[in-house]
Image (cartoon, rainbow, N blue to C red):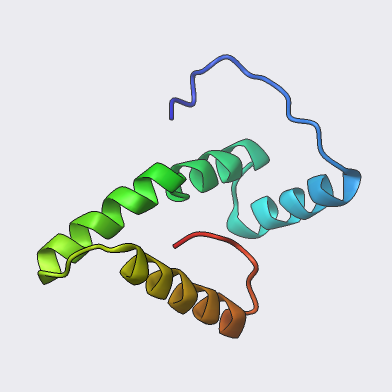
Length: 89
């Protein structure tokens, strides 16, 4: 993402804005850069699926619906142990 892009606004609650400000300050950055980093780091559903297919191919595993479900269940358990609620695989 280019830092020279035309600025825009995102509507959010004051609570979320304050948390973003705190996170940015702790990292020595701005809210804009924090959001840019987050957006660049997080995968879309299509990207997650493509990476899962590539990993299965590298492992010599047929990527069936059953394998996909098992993987999703495994990630859900990992997130539960980490205290997270995200859906990233």
